[in-house]
Amino acid sequence: MKETFVVKHAVGGKIFIDTGKRAVPYKLEEKADGGYRFTVSTPRGPEIEELLKLAHELNVFVFRDCSEENEPTVKTWFYVNEGPVAYDDEKQELTIEAQSKIEYVPDRYLS
Amino acid sequence: MIQVYPEKTRYKVDLGWLKSRPSFQFGEYVDPDNSAFGVMRVCNDDYIAPGRGFGAHPHSDMEIVTIILSGQIRHEDNLGNIEIASAGEVQRITAGSGVIHAEYNPSDTEGLHLLQLWFMPRERGLPPSYETARYDRAKLVNALLPVAAAVPSEGVVKVEQDMTIYLSRLESGRELAFRQEAGRRVFLFVIEGSLTVNGVTLGALDEARITDEPELALKAGGEQAFFMLIDLP
Image (cartoon, rainbow over all chains, first blue to last red; front, side, top):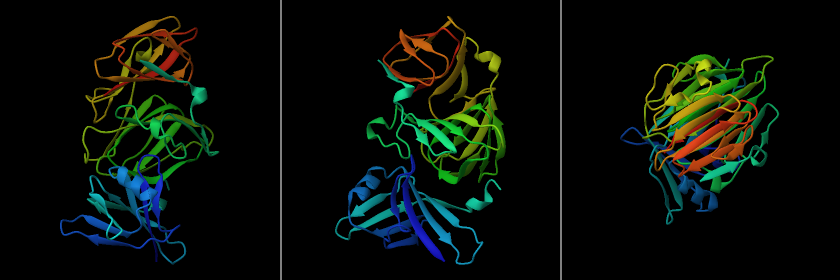
């Protein structure tokens, strides 16, 4: 199973994080209130600065590819709403909290 | 103030299957000084080749209105909607707390031409929904016909924002007036023909962003003008 974590701008699609292209340690937890929290270990560079400015317009995904051939990619999209999305300079950690998620299989659309 | 954005100066995207002219920064077109006009965030003038389109992807907290100008579009979403809409119809998606959808041109032979418009909603987290409406083309002639509005009616899709999208087909030499309320914005897009607004001429596919002009006098040029006028905050 290959897992890819992606964070994009929801308007226009600029990619801020894509672990398929550049590995970044991250952790996904379910919160007690039913939401989700991503904790990402990354330095505070220009892309993280821009991500923080656009915190209310993020598309956050986890893609899962099975090792089996012919098994489609399963995508999970997380609704960030108003987050919070924050950066801890001391820990060099980005946190993104999401309210809900939708799982979908792109191959099942338009078939 | 009438700020004109001529078609020839607009950014152009050509992916082969998709030819697009975005009015605002979008995708590969990056211009932070041109990212919005009031609550309006996107106006993409798209040509989509037969059999091609956009695979499944999410949206949230955006009102997405698609005006189909020629051809057909097939829509499918995670709410269970599967529909083909065609020229003369307007599609609206309230993305709200999240929707997954795919759109493509189902024709084997005919291209699809549409305007895709995105607006920020009146509030975040609304329940997602989808709707289409067919407007009466005869009612476009020499009139401003609402096709999307906060208060829906027959042939008018509902948008979750204090705004109205009008279409009009103005015959050569005919005039229309539009009153712009204080603090409001008008986005004008000429789909076909040429149009004069308060003495400023717009050609086909030109657009104008208008503020602080209480009275708008709209007049068709030498040929009829097919245009879109959006009144928004």
